Length: 304
Image (cartoon, rainbow, N blue to C red; front, top):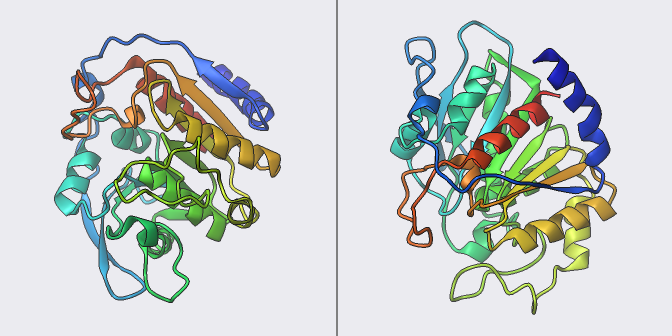
């Protein structure tokens, strides 16, 4: 294992500059039972936490730490839309209750894992930094980072972020405001607002064939970023084109970015089963072999 990790440490920075890597894989689902509930809650109990944000609203987070005093690296995980999932959902995810292995895997690897919420509301105002002084989801994310940074068992210099779908848009804004974040993983990101686009009134992502990213907005958002970024997307994700645009914009700006495309991956496949009703998926939320491959890659990326 040490030899494999050493190779990754050498190779990853090289491909991070521009290459989009494609990974073959099986479409057959894996039984998820062997990958969840693998960390005893006696050793690592869930800590339901409410964090005060800019306007006095409290945002929920479920925190688990490895056994011991630390200081440990930490990863903050932001889910996809909608915001406002609530404590019960966050606690369930952190325990692996829905069948997703991601949250516990980082805990096994020695990370404090904070599964965090953020507010919902009007899509086109809540998912960008406010220009009027009102609070948005970006402020919620900043409050969560500050809280985790202040935990006595966390190494404040080793905080990473993991954002899926709408959570990926949030993470991009956060690393543009907190350039000291150690690493960022974007799973099936929906960077609509980060790219200067708008969500149509009818819902869903914008039509990228008609609407192009705003160069001024994108340039201003990308310029402060110093955090290495890993983008993970599935070949069956309708947002793959948007992820590619994001990758290309980051690359052109000279940022450290790597993008991996996994065959058969549906939108947000990287989390595995989340306990959601997904009429867009004929087989529902399944745990794909590619999800475990992506998870291995994400762990290696934030560790390096």
